Image (tube, rainbow, N blue to C red):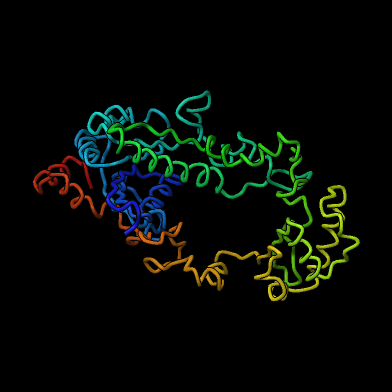
Length: 376
């Protein structure tokens, strides 16, 4: 059983960071009940790993009976998480005020891009917009070229879902002491700003240039970048520390005199070109034979399929098979209360009767709700 065994979370189903947050909490052992929209459909929902480990119920939250069912569930929950625009759940009658009235210890987790207030709080947006506002996107890319979107890892998942999960767990811990619930306002702008803390510090210290692609960790340095190999694949090098850099020079047979001044930024472009030519002389596998497992700080750049079959990931069982598909295993690892995927994604609304029966609904009441199109 995971460390959150015994914790009950109600998730108002959505897309992106909200379901990801619920997945992380379910992986860690929480009971997560995903409240799906009536008639919700998706392409191959069984393959969506963000739905794994959760029970699924279907409620019409635009009906009085559906709202009452949700509030009944809230009474026995530790937390609720939602990812709508500010004000939407209030209009439905399931906002923080109504939920905390039913359960004063409830943690009400809110996931948005811009936050619950501020001049942009009601505007539509996506990950790329949120990380634009915090300097994160500006910092990623090659010199003289446009910024490169880092998928939607920084805003949606790192700055959003993970911070909401931390906020919910922290809120539950505090509520067990105080007896009082509260609202968690998790904005992707706030979270991505926190993720940029190291670079904010470096800039204030005069160690980080606002010109992207010219710094130590953004691909500006010859010893911290990706390089193409003879077979058209790529490797990554991160030889920052002098002892690791020296090993790189030795194994790659790079001339020490030419590469001696590692931190001379003025020479980084020419050294990058020189090292790129060296890496083009061998295939990715040949460089792996020479460098993998050494202190050079080296790894092959793998695609998603290759990553599943790398010996290190196999040894750690970084990927598991659930419901017939390979997907990332729960993280982090615990020595005693080991997290696990509790089950594969459930069909939409598959657990409606079971979950509502647990909070007191009879079969007759469920039939009546269905007749009113209040549940699925």
